[in-house]
Image (cartoon, rainbow, N blue to C red; front, side, top):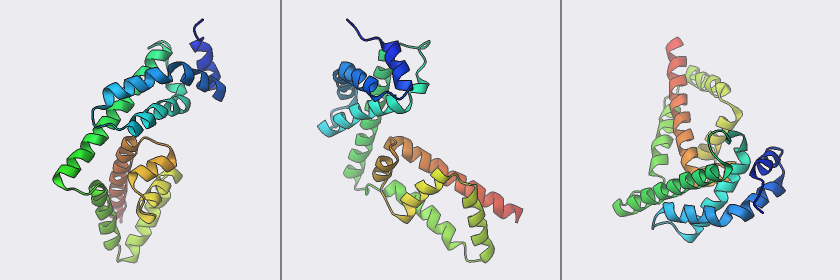
Amino acid sequence: MGLDYPELVKRIRQRDAKALEEVYLALGTRVCSIVRRYAGEQASHEDIEEGTQDVFVIVWKDIEKYDPTRSSFVTWIAMLAKYRAFAIKRANAQRFHREQVGVPEDAQAAGASALIDSLVDKLEAESDRLTLRAIVKQLSEEEVRLLSLRYDRGLSYRSIAEEVHQDEAVLRKRMSRLVLKLRALFREKKSKG
């Protein structure tokens, strides 16, 4: 007898960990196969295992995003597996490219860090420091935490992603948008004087 997926979805939405375990036992091998198939040749065994686990973390965290009118639960999970596999493939391709051309792993971070450093360097005037304080007050607690993890503690994107339980590629995009937001807020505050 097959699993009652609508009932399992309902139980996961009610935060029933046993329901997620049942889904994992039923679909874990299939999800692992999908991640392996689409992650590419450069994906390690560890990448495949982490990718598979990530899919079920996403199911747990984002169950409210599942819409049974758009697809079956199994199809939704299969799509999550493909998206996660593509993220692994992209990350590995970027790492491979950096290794081939000799670019340090945190080169992208260096650009963002340089931006923050240049902002701080420009804050010689007390009014600029006050502006920065006002900007920080406009940020959410989570945004301040991310900036602190990256620039105060100097953590890598991978370490931050693990700490905040978020996909590294998603985190990188989020941090990039956050730096752009800081830049825009700083310019806006400076123009208003």
